[in-house]
Length: 361
Image (cartoon, rainbow, N blue to C red; front, top):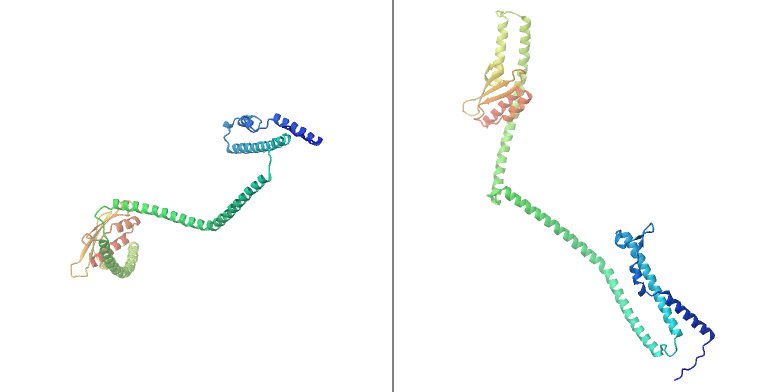
């Protein structure tokens, strides 16, 4: 069958020639993406000084990120050029090819494509509607999910904290059981022990009140006696000064009244403080014996106090007490406190006060 002749205008022939020339140039330009695989694999990154760097030596994430961005940009450009040249190639081929070999697009094909497009549009519309509903549900449920998450997180933290407290409590309980082995107190025994301690505390409180009352009375009496003793000391000092100033002989008759007065003063002091005997066995040792009257019908109790002084400084070094063991009074702390401050009078007064309190109890 003879091919019908076509009258091609001169302008169309020029366009055909241009298209052929463009196609030849495209084929000679070697822009196919498949042929660029080796070149892309051999792509290297240049350093700041212009030297080429091996990809395996690049360890800085910033440099790697920049390299990846540049490669992605390069690939996008290649893809665009490939699509553009492919479209141009198809367009040129469709123009320069014979009309018989060119694909024929009929109205039925366009209608079929239109129906396919309409179906795709309907599916796209339904998908968009579902997507909008999902997004709306996400907006509504996100605050609720966040609230539930915070509540669960708080409950989890609380549970972890309580678990740690339980572990610590078990460790403490185990330590207490190891520290205090059997037998241990039960609740009834502990209650009974508490009741006994309360009763004992009440008795001790009553005794403390009685001791405070006696202490007040003894303190008042001691104050009076101290005032009298101080007066006697002043009078004794005046008498000694008068004796030194008089410088009389032993047979002087003026010493007899003074001696009698001094003896009476010592007797008065002994009667006030219940001093029964005083004896100096050596230069640094003084022995005192006090007789304490008992409130009951029992005989009076005697307390022996031995005061030891340092030979050089004449300060109080120690004190030994006899007669307090029967009364059950502890005075070790009292002796140590007064020996440190060298308070003889305070030590004797404190010992007598505790002895009277123990004797009255």
